[in-house]
Image 1 (cartoon, rainbow, N blue to C red):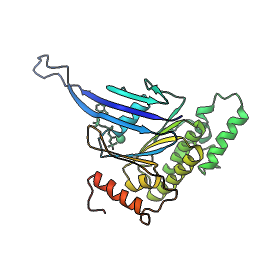
Image 2: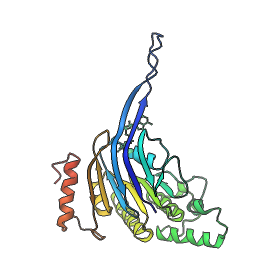
Image 3: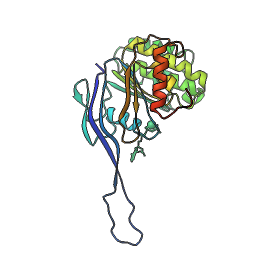
Image 4: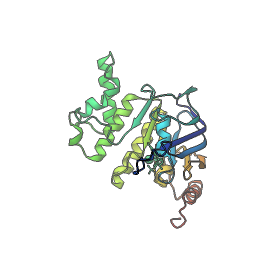
Amino acid sequence: MGHVVIKNLRKEYVERRREPRDGSRGSHQGDTLAVIDGLDLEFRDGELVCILGPSGCGKTTLIRILAGFERKTSGSVLIDGREVDGPSADNIFVFQHSGLLPWMTVGQNAALAVRRMANKQEMATRVAEAIAMVELEGFESHYPHQLSGGMQRRAELARALVANPEILFMDEPFSGLDALTRLKLREEVINMHELLEKTILFITHDIDEALIMGDHLVVLGDRPARIKVSERLDEPHPRNLTGNPRLAELRKQLHRSLGVHFAL
Ligand SMILES: Nc1ncnc2c1ncn2[C@@H]1O[C@H](COP(=O)(O)OP(=O)(O)OP(=O)(O)O)[C@@H](O)[C@H]1O
Ligand SMILES: [Mg+2]
């Protein structure tokens, strides 16, 4: 489960033109913007895939198509052999910065995916385990606004843990957090991935973050998004970026593929 196959994917947006001011009818057709074109990609079951690419290249668009929130123009997207044709609450969880419901406590937010479970005891155990794993014990009755930014992301991680999806989508989940909190949350995601062995698709702008976390690293090129790098890594965690020749070489390759030549 959690196997994704993308074939010859194309996505274009139609940009509506405004009516001309002179009152003539003008064109309603609009311009089309091809954001993704001819994209072939496969995510193996249980892989932690990190996607990098310049701003505006179509990373968020890709996740939205995979999650069924956005329609593709053509091509095929199969998740566990089934074509994606709309949002699927069962097997997919999309991690969002502000995904917590403000009127619910941390405990209630974490329990969202299992709130209809018949066995309330099991439900409570699952929620308690997830909250312990993200180190939020003692904050179960707090509301999101009473938490720091880092704690809010932890609570959102707990929610994902409880939901236990086949695929977890994370679009720059730690943006805006301080460097230390970010490092700790990275560890949480790595631990979570090792524990659950589910497919995670993680978008980041941080090359080192991708190298530290990913089993499969993908760099997308400028619009329309095409693959510039797709490398699988089976280095164990924790990873040493400077002492490991394979990682050091890949680090250079990733920088170059993103047009950075001076940071090497
Ligand atoms: N709903 C939409 N309608 C029209 N154009 C859109 C829409 N959503 C995205 N785009 C365009 O598609 C392109 C890709 O956007 P997308 O958000 O997927 O980029 P991204 O790779 O996630 O960028 P970033 O790294 O800045 O988050 C951009 O040029 C954007 O303007
Ligand atoms: Mg984006």
